Every structure is written in structure tokens, then in C-alpha cells.
Length: 289
Image (cartoon, rainbow, N blue to C red):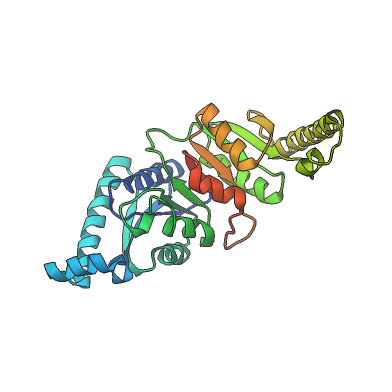
């Protein structure tokens, strides 16, 4: 039985070499958590572009042929993954809007985790994250991993971002079995209220510095209480002054993090500005829980 209570993990792939990263990560997690793995490929309606439709027409390829070919390729991939990782693998091909099909399939099979890739060769997993991958993160009703790195090992250095809310606490608790064995770093970034306005108001720098110091002390106290409430004694914690998205990326580079965990405030998930920046710019994997 999965330590996370997850019975099924859904991994979306466009069958490109780049998207294989997400499949490998999903397989590794499925093996570690003793979960069933389903691989999903979505054939976009209309094949995604007029240029592709023209090529398809020239070569005499029908939509049925495309679906059958995709199903065969996905089955071969599933067989390869099952052999390499020793996991129970199922495959499914559907047609439609990729992000909507991923979310719908996750709901249909009661997946406890969705894994998507940050890079791909077509509309399914755009390298610019302008469409599908980003939308999956926004609309999925279950936690989503955005896989960027080749998973040579289980996660080893994990940042859990926190604003001390119950959403952040739930994300941390969800991730805990997933990152067992990793070094865990809780991180909070703060900007004191009206800091920039105070800096422009002519107030003495000493007064502003004292105000910032009080904010720092308060943030550290919040962090201590947050980590203590989670009973995570082996975790590290850090508090930094500055915009959260900048400081998280900076800290991830410093410790060579391979995963950043952060919480969603609503379901379907709504990405705030911090989440949006991380999804677009972070270089490691992301777990939105």
C-alpha cells in the first residue's frame, strides 16, 4: 500500500524524448510508493495545427491511424517502463484538449498524483509552458509534479516553501512520504508591509532598519512554530528578506535543490504570482500540492 495513500499515479506524455523525463519520475515514485502507474497520451483535436493537418493529408494519415499509432507507441513505452522499474503500468490514449483530458482522466481513475513534463516537442508539453503544462497545474484537482530534471535518484534536496498557512502545512504533510530520505529545507521569504513606501517617505534609515528587524524576528518565530507543529526535527529552515519567487529560485540554486514544494490555495488550483514565477523560471522539479 502506498505510504501516501496514493493508489494510482497519472503521467502525461507526448511521446517525445523530452517528455520521457516525466514518465521516468512518475515510475520512480510509483515504485517507491507501491502505486499503480498509468501513462496518458492525448492526441490534440485537429492535431494541433494546420501545418500538421496538411502533412497528414499529404501522407494520407487518418485520425484513426494517428490514434492507433499513438496507442501502440504508448503500449511499448509502458512495457519498457514496467520492465525497467518493476511497476504496474497501464496506458490510455484520448483525443481532445490536452490539459482538459489530463485533468479529466486523473479524476476518472482517482489518481492521487499527476506528473507532467516541462518540455516536449508539441502542444502537449510546451517548452514555454504557455499552454498545457501550465493549465494542468491550474485546473488539476490533485497534486501535480512538474518534472524538469532526469531522475537518476529519488529526490535528495527538497525545499518546502511556506507562508505559514494551512495550505502550506497540508502541502508539507502530503510531500513528507514522497521525500523520505531527502534533506528538507523549509523556506519563507518576507517583505515587510509598506517597506517600499517607507523607503520613499523620507523616514530615517535607522528607523526603517529597526522596522525590518522586527519583521525578521517575527518571521523567524513563525517559522519555528510552523516546523515544530509539523514535528519535522531533521529539517532545516531559513527565512530571507525579499520577493518570494526570487529568493526561492536563489536558494534552490544555492543548495542544488531537485524539488520545490508549495501549496495551492484553492481547488481547482489557482496559481498566485509566486507560483507562476516558479513554474516558469525554476530549474528544478516542482510539486504543487
